[in-house]
Image (cartoon, rainbow, N blue to C red):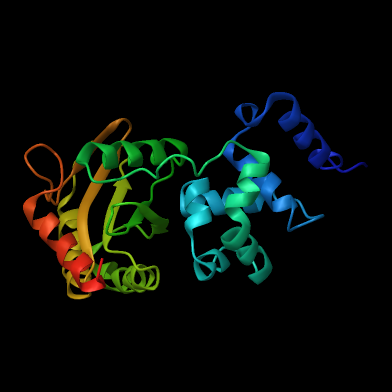
Length: 247
């Protein structure tokens, strides 16, 4: 029986050259980039795994080699290609991703809508962490285990190690309630407070923790200002980090 993947790459290229990047989904564009470094293997599962881990094509290109190598199927060669040549490869197969400024996640509603979009595409129940730099730009998006008081400290250690290794200043947590309201349970609040303390002691700010249910979102750390922008305490924290880094 002929393989269902036979001729797949040729068909993908034909679609691109016929309809342009507008005719293709993000994972398909990433597949085409991976063709340059993985000449024969089916790279569709790897493209999905990278996007699931880092949240966007931009996130894939901004990820460190170490973070990329944590994704199954990514070795040193693929990680080096994505970090060193990602920008140029993107220009070959798609629109100029890097001509526009990266989004800034410094607003309560911007972050809430970001997570609504994420969980709309990944409907299973999960908890995710978004790492941001001092300018409130995305560094990495990754999944944590479901929150509960007993494991909060353990998960905090793993997330702190990742935040430090990637040079993150801010972390934002979000989890979804697929069958319930966008409202935190008592265990959500308690375990998040435990993680908040652990992050703070290591110099990383847990800015907000969102509960997502369909199109609705609620953050229960309340660290935004009255106009839903960054509050004074948050600004002071970011300014102190920038000063310490000599920015």
